[in-house]
Structure formats: structure tokens, C-alpha cells
Image (cartoon, rainbow, N blue to C red; front, side, top):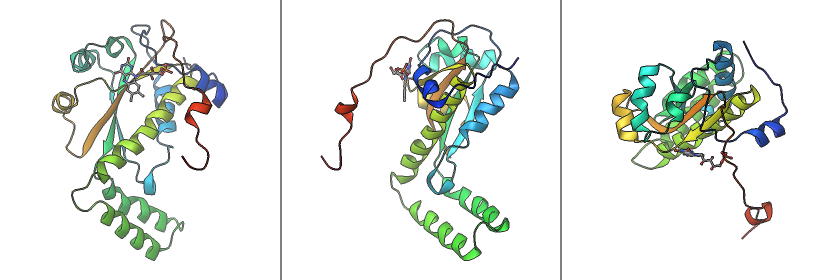
Length: 210
Ligand SMILES: Cc1cc2nc3c(=O)[nH]c(=O)nc-3n(C[C@H](O)[C@H](O)[C@H](O)COP(=O)(O)O)c2cc1C
């Protein structure tokens, strides 16, 4: 059964916390999973290249395999599933498809498309940190959107950077094109998250210039 809560954005943000204890065996309806992922892919991205792939790990054996890779953090096996957020290191390859579609639908003239595709391919040339920076940056925006979408539907999440990336890539057959950005557990909370604090706004906001 779906559990839409339709809570407002600010309340969703307030209520999202990194939950580590989940109701074991809780199954999230497929429709909710789809709607959460649909929300995630609405995230903005540089040149609209959509530098993300979502590896959804919901098979119990696969979760068990992932557990030691994630330093035995139990939320991997107790949550309903884990989404490995992958960033696209060759997102420039998406440009032709995305912009040709825009041309075909009359959203963009052909010459603008050709200029943009040329610019994008130019930016990805050479051995620079740019493709990796872009992959991590843009995939992270989708991850954030997925966390908020899950919370708005009444589920909880935990973003996780604590996992062995090389081993993950090997054991889950991640193609070279993609970099693992984070793991995201999603499920029904069994216990609330540990309380966390934030710096005061005045500590983090700088107006106009340092
Ligand atoms: C990139 C990233 C990596 C994180 N890695 C882990 C992790 O490996 N394990 C874990 O339990 N929490 C992890 N967290 C959760 C943070 O500890 C948590 O977001 C922070 O303490 C603030 O708490 P809150 O999310 O409940 O507001 C990570 C969060 C982020 C954004």
C-alpha cells in the first residue's frame, strides 16, 4: 500500500534525517519506488546531461554481499533497498541524444544544438578533473532529490560515503564509465535518527564577499 504524506517541502527538509535502524523486511510498493526515482531524475544538471545512474540493490543476497563492502553498516541489510548513486564520467556522450530530441521537438534550432554539443565535447577533452567533478556534483543533486522524495512519501534514508569503492565497482560490475558517488539506503524507520545539529546561519552565510 502506498503511503503518500504530501507534506510540504520545508517540513520534508526538517524531517529528513539519516536513519540507521530500519524495519527489517519492509517492502516499499513498486509504484512508490518508481515515483521516488522519477522525482530524483527531475534534478537539474550541467547542460542537462543528467550525469546519473541508479543501481538499485534490493536482492537480499546482494545486500549481504554489499554489507562488508560498506564496512558492515547494518542499514544496508535492514533497509528495504540501497541505491548506489553513480556519476557519469562521459556525460558528454549524452549531449547528442538530449539535444537532438530538443531539436526534433522544436525546442531548439539545429545550429544551436551543434554549437552546444561542440562546447560540451570540448569541455570533456583532455585529462582534467572536470568530468569527475561534474559526475559527482550532478549525481549528488539527484541523490538529494531522492532523499527528499523518499521522506515526502513517508520513508527514510541514509546517505553513505563509507564504502570501499574499488571493491564495489569490481563486485557489482560497475562499468568504467561510472564513478560510485554514494550509497543511499531507503526504508521504513524502526528508530529515529540520532539528533544532529547545524552551525548557525550567521556562521555559514557570507554576504557579497569574504
Ligand atoms: C556524503 C555523505 C556521506 C555519509 N556517509 C555516511 C556513512 O557512511 N554512514 C552513516 O551512517 N552516515 C553517513 N552519512 C550521514 C551523515 O552522518 C549525516 O547526514 C549527518 O550526520 C547529519 O545528520 P542528518 O542527515 O541526520 O541530518 C553521510 C552523509 C553524507 C552527506
